[in-house]
Length: 214
Image (cartoon, rainbow, N blue to C red):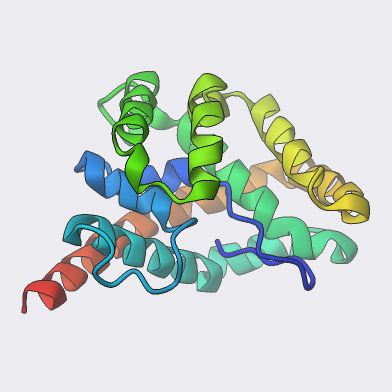
């Protein structure tokens, strides 16, 4: 989900795990999926074709997520004053739901999956934009992706992001109250939405590949 708060620079979404999972077929593809949050708008010719495809797919996934009926309904469950921060909280929460129910989506254990991805980041450090290069070591050391199985990691991640919002940080943290109040409904929405997102991602990936080879 693409998130912009007020007139500030966009705050990068935190649904890293979901994007990486959707590109799980290849290590370079997973790298591209994460780069979608960090690479500049025009990536033509700047990366290997597989990575470039996944960067473009990442952006299409964000657009699909933003326009999906489940997402729109979920946003409406947040109090009006906090709604502009709801996308950030949902991004983190959706990664939590994916991690919590990981065996339903993958035969590879979550910790094995994320450790492999951290190694991929380290191997391809020369391709990482400065901002990602800066956070990649902390992502691995603190196991951001693997820790999302615990709901407390949702609170921790939201609090970490809120520190970058000065006075608005309180509103972001308060959005956790809406998340807790509507936990059941939001969880049910994700269970409906994510399989559809998986189908969309695969279809769009095939379309992008055909376009690049056509």
